[in-house]
Every structure is written in C-alpha cells, then in structure tokens.
Image (cartoon, rainbow over the protein chains, first blue to last red):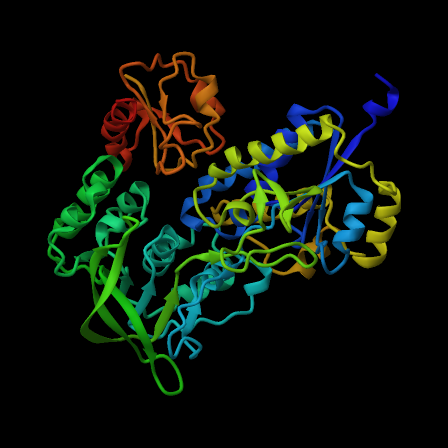
Length: 456
Length: 87
C-alpha cells in the first residue's frame, strides 16, 4: 500500500440536522482517514432538532449533544455555521475542495393545499409557526394573530398535534420550556380556546403516533372531542386497520373521546376526521373555512383514499395552520425531482441522467422524503455512508483539486461571519445559563446578530 | 421488574446492539422498524442491566419502578408490543 492511499479524505456534509450528524458519526467511526467539514446555513447546528422538535419535547433535543460529542471526540471534524452552499460558495467550489459531498439539507419547504383563500392573512404553513415558536432566525419576525377564539389546523401528522399542544398548553407550562421568548409572550395573550384538527381520511389512517396521542390525555384543561364522521365500517374498507400499533392508536383515540363530557374544561380540541378543506373564507383576512365530508374507498393499488361527498360545512375561525407535510427544496446546481421533492439517488448516491454523480451523496429527508422520526435517519445515513466508503475503496473518489486552506480563505472572503464549534459552545452555554436563571432548559437566541455578538 | 421505553423514544436504536439479551424490538432491519412509533423492551427477557438506559441519547429508558404515574401505561405498551413484534 502506498502512502498516497492513506492520505486524508475530506468529506463535506451540507446540513447539521440529525441526518447530517448521523452521517458524520458513521463516517468518522468507520473510516479513520476521513475528515468531516460540516456546513450549515444557520449559525447553530441541529437542524430540526433545534427548530422543529416541540418545546414540550425538549428531551429529544439531547440527541444532538450526544452525537456532537462523539463526532468532536474523533478530532477529525469542523463545523462551519452561517455558510450557505449555493450562496456563499457554489457546488463546484465545494466539490473542488473536498473528496466527496453529502447533502443533508432536509425538506424545509411546505406543501400547499391549492385552494382559494390560502394566502389570506391569518392562513399560514404550520412549518412557519413551528419555526417561530422554536426561535428559528428566518421566522423570528413573523406575526401570528392569536386574537380569535377558534383556530383550524389542517393535517393529521405529529406536527399538527405539536402545533395544537403549543396553542393549548398555556403560559404556566410554556414558561418552563425553551419556547422562543417572542412566542411565549404572544401565546400568553392568545385568545384561542378551541382547536379543530382536520384529517381527510379516517382515524385509522391518521399518522399520529402512540406517544403523541397519549400526551393529549395529559392536557388537563382541554376537552378532547373525536368526530370520526359517519364512517362506521373502516375495517371493511381498510383490511390493515385491525392490527398492532394501529389498533392501539384506535384504542387511545376512543378513550380520548370517552374520557369526559367536558366537565367545565375551558378549552376544546376536536379531531375531525373524513374532512377536507375546500376554501379558506374571508374578505380582508381569515374568517372561516369551508370543508367537505369525505368517505373512504380503496383504489386499484389497494391504497385507502378519501373521496369527497356533497356534504359541505363552514367553520368560523380566525387562524388556519396547514400541516400537510414538509417538502424538499431544490439545491442550486444539483438534480432535483420536483414531483417527490427529493434529490434523485440510488442508495444515497446522487443520480443525474441515469448515472451516479461521482462524489455526490444525499441523506435524510432530501434523500427519501419527509417521513419517519429522528432515528430513521440513522439507518438512512448508514446506507449513504456505506455507498461513499465503497466508492472510496474502489477508487471512485477523485482527490480534491485544491486543499482546504484555499477553501478556508475563500470562505473568509464570502462569509466573513462564521460560527465554528467553539463559538457555538459559547452560544450554547449562554442560552443554558440564561435558562438556569429562569428555571428553563434554555433561553434561545433567535437573531443571528445576537449570536455573533455574544461570541465576540 | 424490567426497564421500560417511554414516548420520548426517537428510534435511534443505540440501545439495540448494547442489550446483552437482545430484548429490544423492532430492530433496524426488521420489517416494521421503519414504521414503528417507538421501540419496546420485552419485560420477560430484560435482565435489568441498565445498558440501554446508558446508551439512549434522549433518556427514554427507565427502570419500571422509576416510571412517573403519567407514564405508567408504557409498562403495558412495552409488554404488548415487544411480544407483538416478535410474533
């Protein structure tokens, strides 16, 4: 073996959310020659663990610290926050200075409903609301009018329930969490007392998980109402409806609906199934939503579909949050499948015109679409890293044309304010110290200028 | 007595390879791993070694006797699904 074969292999990872962190940990564990340079367009690492995970689920945020420690312990890792690939540096430049690039950019766009009134003031993507209460710098200046009594959330996934809990938990509880300060004061003034969560299919098809459903039982001052429509024979339609985890979800839903008859609880959460939005109503701003009742049918492929009936209804409300899924964003200069919102790939190798692009890889939501939980990205990252290391062993990775020092110089010119891991530690300690004084896990900074100010 | 996984679980599965008696389900590679809401410990097989609790990056594994009342239901859920997944 020549010395050349032992030369360090420099891998760029674009994105520092769970997928990027799992990929870095896996690479550094499996191949001692690999150095990882991680870039993020935000100054702070963590992706959706920081800006997506709900403040009442702060334990799940611990995941990043564990993997960050593992990665840092390798001594072969650097973090570069506040560097946007495609803006500060091109894909070309990134490729020229690294042996391989792994795209871990997630799926930060939101799906739209495509119905009239969607852009009225008071109608928002749930992802914006989530970013706002989680101190994401892009959403820190957003305003959500919470002066109405009733809000409608469209969608039947865990994000819909996260948003519902944030609107219902109340100030006493929220002030012990790491919710953004601007959201804490806005939610304290909130007049919202009633939430209606719309699902186009039945309770059996909803993608709420068991833990999220069980949490609804803990909302002491909230009456939960289950409106399952008139579909009483879901098992006949959906043969998979009967078993295992789905059955447990049904059991918990049934318990939620039967738990109490209101008994004076001041807030109400209605899970309204077999209902689709038709139009968001209002002149100057949202005044209501028109919905249609659905019935279930099974298509030729065996998938359970919602079919609209002629039965419509208007629900008065002042706020509509659509939570019908995240969607990938195209990465400038890289292939993108606009229909599915992912970077086309084979087991993690990026594919363009039917061929694998040597040295380009993808992981996480940008690879497989926005589904699964945090840990789903670990298996996903293992697959991508296996592909990369195979290419390394078979000599398919070209050594970089130019070294990292040249790239550092370029970065200093293009993005003068960068957050390295040491600086992030300063921000992290600052946030946690502020939290300690208030009895909260942390008090989060939501402005990039503030973050750089305290690292000076 | 056994260890119990609670709803904080993120399916990271760091607990699976450290378990000396392989009593945590589903495992990465199992058909239902990708769609599982969380992972479960079989209370009949668990030997109370604490390895899973140490490995968990989010603190989602607790000894049964330390389960707070509002999470007590996870004891039955673990038992039901660890068996269900195996069968």
